[in-house]
Length: 147
Image 1 (cartoon, rainbow, N blue to C red):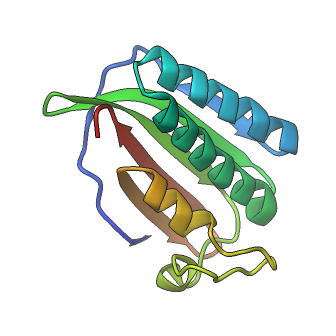
Image 2 (image 1 turned 90 degrees about the vertical axis):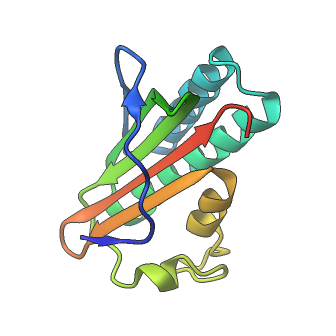
């Protein structure tokens, strides 16, 4: 698998992971709402909740657009005294051939603005992308409280 950045392993502090199957626009809305609610209940500021929700929307939209279906998982994590929320987007789609190109602002294979992945990276504190052509893509992001 090809990796853009390495995210440190964090301890899971939530008893469970919330997982949303993604295949339709409605699924994107559901995942976004769950993420916003989880962030708010965990003490994130309103602006951070909005950033987390936007990142979830972008990742879930990419699943629909490029893979057809996949899932978004959310869980609370802790690392060295920091508490945060982790968002993992996974699909079994075609994979990303050129990760550095896909991470470049303005690059799009779907005639979009090309801000989804690089924008998501800017919204979140940690970002890891792993993709294998013909197998799928896993994107793991984290937002930390108080950052």
